[in-house]
Image (tube, rainbow, N blue to C red; front, side, top):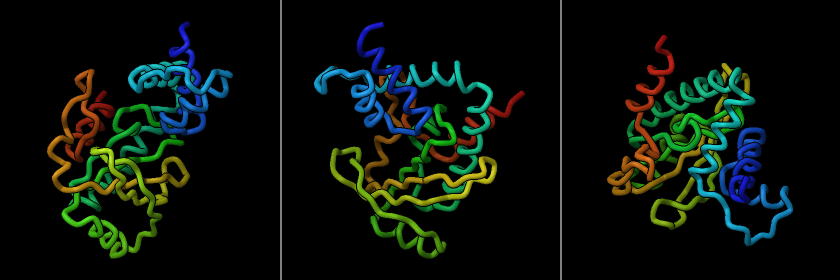
Length: 197
């Protein structure tokens, strides 16, 4: 096993077992393996392959139901926030989520404050943070603690507030021809496929 594969395997365990995002998982994997900080890191595709392998080996009996519960919760929030053209991204979209995963929704707004006003009108509490947007700049991220009844726990729903114009490139496929995100109709198609006999 080469070094990047070893890092990817260690990081995959942290993603699945501790719910870490890919970047922090790779950094922690370096420390766990006792490797120098400048060691080349695996790409996200390689890490995702290792996550899928780990899920197949160790979580095949629990992960599909957890993913289905998270996708159903994502769909509810996408319906509630439909005016902001929400797109689901991250592990819940890609099918690698477990009960520890956050739900990541991207909202496309004419006015960045309009989503906050909508949440206030819905009586929803949220925290405000910053994440890197598609253009490399810092954008607001609103984080909601949402109850997920099937999992019997609270799930973080992270709403990244993007400019309306950012929607144009939103559905471009990645290097493997897969979409990085999907709207509610695309999510429902995925859910229907999973529920098909």
